[in-house]
Every structure is written in C-alpha cells, then in structure tokens.
Length: 234
Image 1: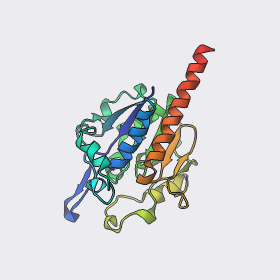
Image 2: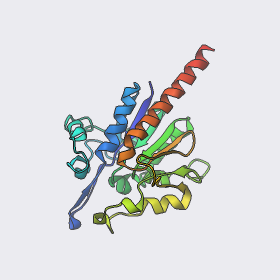
Image 3: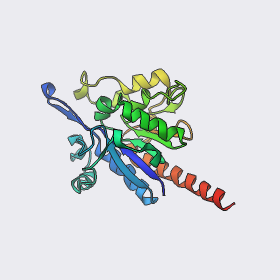
Image 4: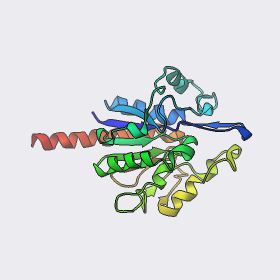
C-alpha cells in the first residue's frame, strides 16, 4: 500500500464581501474513497494544521445533492490535519492538493508546501492536484530552477466555469497562469477530465472529475507497487 498526503487550504474570509471559501468537499473525499479502495493510506495536511475550513457551498444541496460528502465531513474525517511544516515528505509516495478557491490564497505561495512537493517529486513520487489545487504547482520550482509544470500538459478549473460571484475576489486566474508555463486544456468535450503531464504529474479539471482523478492516482500507485514487488522477487 502507498502513503498519500492530501493537502487542504485552511480557508479564506473576505468580510467586506461576505465571502468564505476553503477546500472543496468532493475534491477531498472522492479521491480518498478511490485511494482507500486500492488499499492506499491517506494523511492530511494544511498550512496551519488543525481543522481546515471547508467551502460551505461544497456541502450544499446544489453541489452535494445526496449529502454523501456532507455525511463524510460530519464524521470528522477532515477535522485533524498536520501543519505542512511538520510533514516528513519522504514518508509519502504521492501528494495530492485538494481544490477549492482557498488553495488560491494560502497554498499557492506556501514555501513549506513547495518544499514538500519537491521532496516527493525528487524521490520519484507522484505530484497531483485537482480543480484549483494546481495553484501551488504553478509557482513550485525544482532544484534546477525549472518549474515543476513547465511545458507539461495540464488542466485545472477553467475561467469559463468560474462563478460571477468571485469576480474581483480571487488573487489570480488559475487558467491564465497555467497557460503561461504549460500546455493547458480544459477538456471541454469531456464530462470528466484528468491529464497525466508526465509519469509523475497528474492534474484534474473540476469537482466532477474528482472520482476519475482518484481512480487514476490509485491505479498508478498500485501499478508502481506491483513493479517494485516484481523487482524484489526477480
């Protein structure tokens, strides 16, 4: 079984505009369920640790009509996270960054997170992110000075899907920034859309793509484990 680190935003509040955001429920729980089906273990981290703020919209009837993710949230599964600075990155085979607009605020430029991403990547692990989760990957540089996403095929939440309510409230456009450094696609013809930019980089477009994102990550980790076992017994 592989160990995976899921990274969540601690949340962001703009009192002037009555705007509260954080991590998106489906984008944590759907991949976690897929990873656990394959027997992988998921640990949780956030910049400050503790209980991170979930985007309340992600638990609403509109976005969670069956209450599936609300029920998981209320079980307290995401109530305890390790501060990123305390994470031992070498313990993990993969990292996945959970989306939600919160990632644009406190994860995008978090240097401790960038350090963890680098260690996971440099030790051969998988670096992945879904929806707005690629925000910190945009600014993560490898030891050679190259951006971790430079020139790769990627996806993430597209401009055309951003709700009007967040106009002027986000610190940058995810799509615009990704297009500057990578080969961005929104997979507009696909109901669910994920992209392997390399053997180690996986990105997913939106909440609806979260289950597929989780399956892809889980399958890759299982495949890597099987290859390691084959080497061991050869």
